[in-house]
Image 1 (cartoon, rainbow, N blue to C red):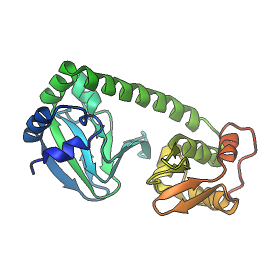
Image 2 (spheres, helix red, strand yellow):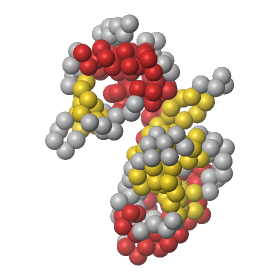
Image 3 (cartoon, one colour):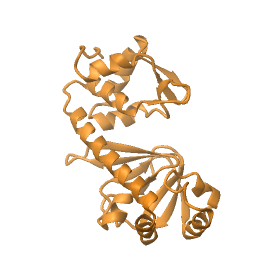
Image 4 (tube, rainbow, N blue to C red):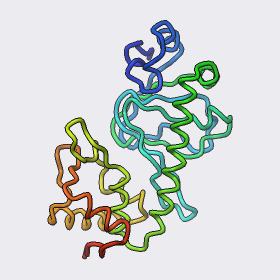
Length: 233
């Protein structure tokens, strides 16, 4: 399916390009829909496309040697993914799956490379994304070294929280307990018990698809080992 130019204008990487360039890129791209839990691409596949998430939500995952699924990152609507393989030509480093019904647009890798090399503002955005990804990987390694699963839950929530336009601290499109579990090396049941404790203490509260953070200091103190993690028995 062809991509309407106005869809590309909503993409964070492309929104500052001139209209004529957006129209040219739109003519080169195709779109595909994915059901929840469907694989968008597999690890070790050739990086033939730079991908843009038009709608939905995706998660990058990998598997341990014993077959356990490990969550790596999320891709939100309006963002892009697959840039590493486009840049270095190496196979995909992880799997990407749909965690909600999603629509993905595909830009051929050669066109994406030309876009990055010929547009300094695009190159700067891609570099900033890569640096952010490296920092996130480093933070995730530190998180996985925490011995207590409740501490890991709190640390993971701290990594996801943002400030909205009203100044509230929250997690937009909060991940499910299962999605958090595979990111912090814990069972879904353990994550659920931790959330029950946090909600009963008024630390977090559900607000539709978002999670309001009412006591960020407590989450931070638990994550940093300043206070004892909540008992999730």
